[in-house]
Length: 381
Image (cartoon, rainbow, N blue to C red):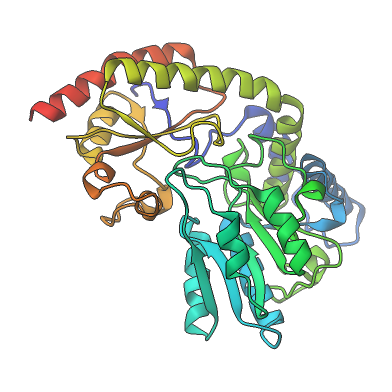
């Protein structure tokens, strides 16, 4: 099999081998249901609670404020629908942004069909909301503000702490989809003034199919999934013990190695950006130049089609994307790039490169040798 050069870490990450090692015993040897009372089952219960502590530590939360879910999509749905149906007698107005992941946008659209009113805040050319717009949008019947921490396509980081102060002032519940942020940058829920935070294991070198939801102590929450007593009656269903253990281990590794990883990845990403500028003079970089995830480059190249470029890169072993993996195969232009008012001709030539801790400088050098030739070929065709 040809070597793969993976530049699509915002779509998913390769699992850290230490995460897999932590998970392995819970597939066969320690297989018991953690809700059972016998000793072997209680060892599984202990593993779940250790993982809860590991996730909580990464967020500076209390372990009692963490519940496990199947991933970011479930966490987002659980919050948005819980608040909507819990507070519908108080109000039916929700505020979000035009650049949210579809795991937020689509639940909001669903609620509109149920009689709720949703305000979709615009963003500036860098993808950042205007705080004044947010304040103007707040109404007496506003029950929830949900704004992502960092955008999955362009990497732009929103002013979450500032938004948190506003939501506390107006006594409105605040949720942030932090799937792209957790594990890359420090996230301190006690400083942010939030009620809910979503995260996903497979974005920080953990397993797929597992995520977590932070629910601030004292926050009202109506479970999305009813059934047994699991997760303090907040999320029914037998716990995915191997996945939970893996998520916990991934959070522990992130806690211990985040700064070291950042130094390496930031250097590689800057080298990639500098090389692209030198070799493709008309390239345009999207998103905020500073207030963005250090691993993410979103670029538009006039005169090329991104899908053609991705196919040609794939033939050389490079994996990249033109936007969210959850929207792959959909011919519609990126809603994120449209919100930035990027012309459709440029959107059609936009690619996202997102690096991770397993990338190397040699890969960047090889990419900078191959990709400009692809661009030149596409422009001349």
